[in-house]
Length: 207
Ligand code: Z5A
Image 1: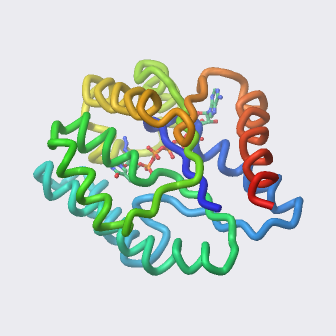
Image 2: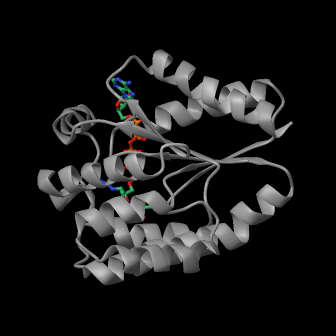
């Protein structure tokens, strides 16, 4: 089973992935947690390039770097893990490119979708949790982590994140069965229980 998490920076994906994977592991599921861009040596190198605030990267080059990192992760890590029967959880996947490079940067959607298809060989998550948070609230959370330097993507400005959020809401409208919108301002435990209900239902259906 393949589960992904989406949402703008600081929406609580990491928090929820930790809770979900710990609960699944406690029930003896074989869980692999990954992040995008990253999850293997090559994709982590691409991540460094993409997030380095000193790099001036053109929008299409940015898209191609994100999908190159994705192609490596799918081929070398995700597909083998799924074939081995693992439950794979990934922090971001195809929908991030649609939201950020498509809606955020304005790259035509057919180009983004085509790049995603090439990178993944049409692998689509079984379920995706979209933690929906207004960018202004996310910015407040980021300010609470002021020890970290702002990376290249985080420097893109609030209107960019508004467009990305709008993109996510569009995906939620278009794919309501797979792409589940959750209110990210709720208590983390309440969000986790909602996610758990979806995941345990899906596991039951698969067995
Ligand atoms: N990107 C792209 O453009 N295209 C692509 O195809 C892909 C990615 C794959 C990767 O960032 C960047 O790449 C990202 C999108 C772009 N750019 N931005 N901006 P990243 O991997 O470095 O980070 P991130 O994924 O954007 O987010 P994050 O920093 O890891 O945050 P998070 O995981 O969503 O949130 P968190 O760490 O769980 O929580 C943030 C804080 O909020 C923390 O202090 C928590 O304690 C707190 N929190 C969590 N939940 C709650 C609730 N429910 N209430 C209150 N406070 C909470």
